[in-house]
Image: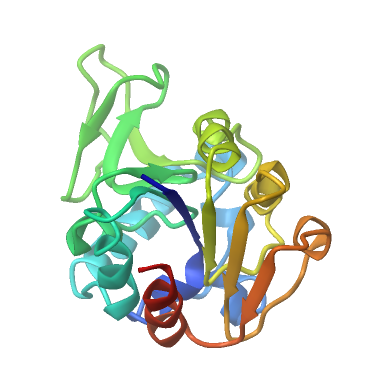
Length: 228
């Protein structure tokens, strides 16, 4: 069975109504990234950080997976399929995809501030005073700017063994995720789907690259029709 790896970025979720900070000149829903998405921000004002992610979680509950998410999920019965996403939402899960690697964490989970392996399903607000089983404050299960990406090695392993790679809705400018395609087998076929595609160093060196300058809801079904 052929292996398909799908690398998704903010663009695919934007079509479901989830805004991204890159659409607003470095702001995310009116906030500077440095104020809500760094370890320093948490140390400086944890209440502001919790409020921000509580609002993002509420917003997530108001949107639904789009045609691109559902099209990707349709690959599962036909290929060995792995979704590697830079997004923190659960739209791939809700669309039906089963094998998902979240590089940057998950908005619907919380984790201990001191013991990273203590992670909990969490779809409600996180408050100051919400503690893990060891007595430490809970925080959003998000990989903030400046933190290590714990799932990166697993993602690299999946990319190395892929026959087909779909890059969907990613600016391909945020590293280390943007560098993943550099690990692809030289025989792997890569499809880059984005309305404003930008070829980074890794993509520009690929011979088996097809660029589809379309939105995810249009380009993903087109590519999948070729694969099947």
